[in-house]
Image (cartoon, rainbow, N blue to C red; front, top):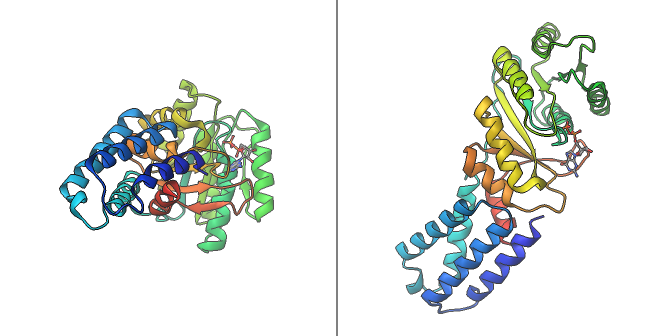
Length: 295
Ligand code: GDP
């Protein structure tokens, strides 16, 4: 993961590491390299520029050049700033409400259904919850079927109404079913399209309004770079979602999405998906991600 970015930053920091004495020119060159690495990782131009400007200001403020190990201090500043850019602390998931209602949003293929299963499995095995999965895709019978396969594999019940073409009703009925049957978390998997379209947005906005979820999560494929940012913005404008799920981080992906999405929509990344299996889910740790990016 993030090979490109890591390699580039490694090169940039190579100038600094091991040098007892560095000059203002070294610092400027390194930060330029950092900026280039961020741009190569698909980080938005303005974000990358602001980032390096901020690090430079801090470096000057802390008189980096006069310290004993200026290189290390600069590396630390970059790491801290990168951590901050990705949200700083770990963002938890809100499990209040009885049942807790979690609405999944995102484009088709982003990994919504897979992640719904992973989250149900995580809540079942790690948080001692009794989750219910809800199939709210009224367009693709295969999507409902896929959720059943996922549910079966983790031993979690799936609620669906294959004949009902009203996703608001299905979601509301599912919550009633959950209350009547002792489920304390309801995970609503919604229909996605291949691109943002008006009807999909209208539909999910209606479901959102009707069920008032404790958590609205936006699922996005980390491999989609700048597009991920545009999609995040479109969904956030409609749903004002609570958190982001970055999937497919096991693939040959760049780190840009993690950085840019947080900066553009100012919502925390809560979990990452690292594979197709049900246990391939990790809480998102900004500091770990920053360390990984920087190598
Ligand atoms: P949906 O259309 O948003 O519900 O997306 P799916 O859950 O059907 O996922 C689309 C494809 O991506 C499937 O083939 C999944 O197995 C795969 N997938 C989902 N999450 C991950 C992940 O974290 N890593 C990898 N490698 N594949 C994933």
